[in-house]
Image 1: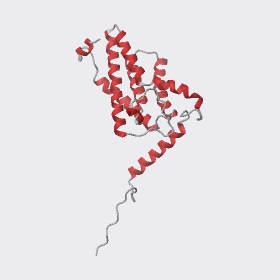
Image 2: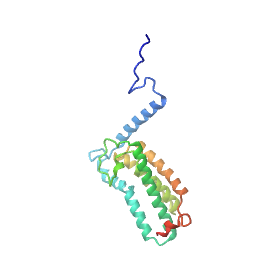
Image 3: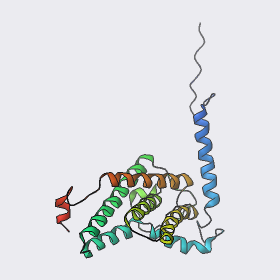
Image 4: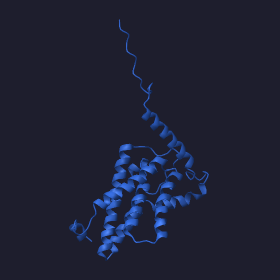
Amino acid sequence: SAAAPLPEEDCMKLNPSFLGIALSSLLAIDLWASKRLGVCAGEGSAWGSTRPLMKVIEVSGHGIPWLLGTFYGLCQSDSSAAREVLLKLLFALLLDLVMVAVVKGLVKRRRPTHNKMDMFVTISVDKYSFPSGHATRAALVCRFVLHHLVLAVPLRVLVVLWALIVGVSRVMLGRHNVTDVLFGLLLGYALYSVVEYCWLSPLSAPALFALW
């Protein structure tokens, strides 16, 4: 009689694909590098004394201060040009929140094990790590500011540095893995293109501008 077929492998493939090996290696490097770079993850970490400064940077990239500041600017502005830019920034920030929440809910990657859950104002999807919402927002706001504000070169450099520092601080605090931040920066950069394509103006959205 014919021999019974061998049971299907459950947890291991005898001939893993090149793509599978590459992804597994990338994940291992990502986790290793993220843990090594998490030098402010706790008070007892290598750079634990700088943790309060890193948390200030964390707040600077949080969505709530940006949303409240933009909304306040809209209420106080008496210039139609300024209201147009601020309304567009508000749209960009809301789009950022929605996109990050959707991706986090789909991927459901847990935060690094060395992270302390003492983050500033979190919601349900914030228990997930991928992508970094702070990095996404920093890249989006950076492109927005550079395109719509006339700034001297030193200030433009400071805006770019702020976006990069926000991203780096997420890994240093142990909030995110390296790939979470890198993808977040790329997503924020791409979201700005969507914002530009959907540019709101008194001509394209008169009812919206009538509210202000």
